[in-house]
Amino acid sequence: MDSANKIIITCAITGSIHTPSMSPYLPVSPEEIAEAGIAAVEAGASILHLHARDPKDGRPTQDPKVFQKFLPTIKNNTNAVINLTSGGAATMTIEERLQPALQLKPEVASLNMGSMNFGLYPMLNRFKDFDHAWERTYLENSRDLVFKNTFADIEYILSSCRENKTRFEFECYDISHLYNLAHFLDRGLVEPPLFVQSVMGILGGIGAHPDDLQHMRKTADRLLGDTYQWSVLGAGRNQMEIARQGASLGSNVRVGLEDSIWAGPGKLAESNAEQVRLVRNILEELGLSVATPDETRQILGLKGSDQVSF
Image (tube, rainbow, N blue to C red; front, side):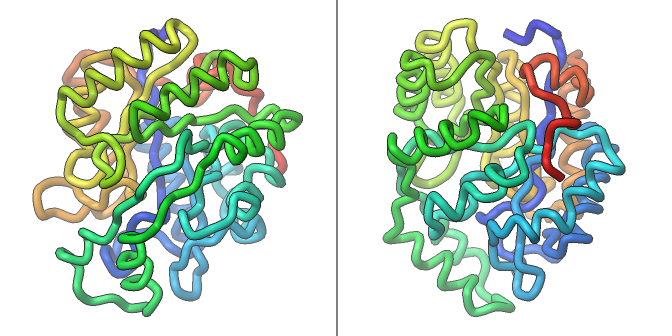
């Protein structure tokens, strides 16, 4: 399905899943995020998926002003495709979540394709000590939290960003999310090539068993045909194995400290770049080539970095 015969590596630098106390290597300040992004591109990533953090306590924020503290630095020092989150955190309103993509007009924005339980609380079994009070509460509250992404929410994001010519990383955490995407394709509200990210191993979504990955692929093929480019990410300890399995089936891959803070059993990844190097080694062992940022733009039909607002 990859007409350019190249594998796209996305690196998710820092998201809302992990909290700063879980790893000393998680970038929090704008300077740390910029440095981490530049290093990930140098290691082989062509897309950077970016969230922002309040530098005071590491709390997730969707304030475009915070994004603007690191986006120009990354743009001036790399040729990377910038992918801004519209997911933010499950505790935010849809209007709040959309602001970075709406105001900054990136080449790509993430878009969650369905409402779901999003269970982060099992992390409390591993991590006991937190530097900030919000961290434990944030994880504990995920026992009774629905990450809301209704059809109206999805249509709101699609319509709001249409004039920006921002394309989307459609994050599909379960089979139903593929059906939702097919629904919007049938309605003409999304246009090929679709960039479909299969998210594996989040509690509340599809698991990370090889059969689950095969089911995702077969269902996407049946529903979307030749209209999509496929990518996979594995949460937590599943990261590299899912990347290996997906790539062997022809997928692109996503890694990064948003999705996993590990570089091996019991070993914290010391940087996003370390994970990019690990997955690049996997791809090269499989005899696959890594796409450059400009090849990625061609594969995904992107507007170009000269048409963003940062």
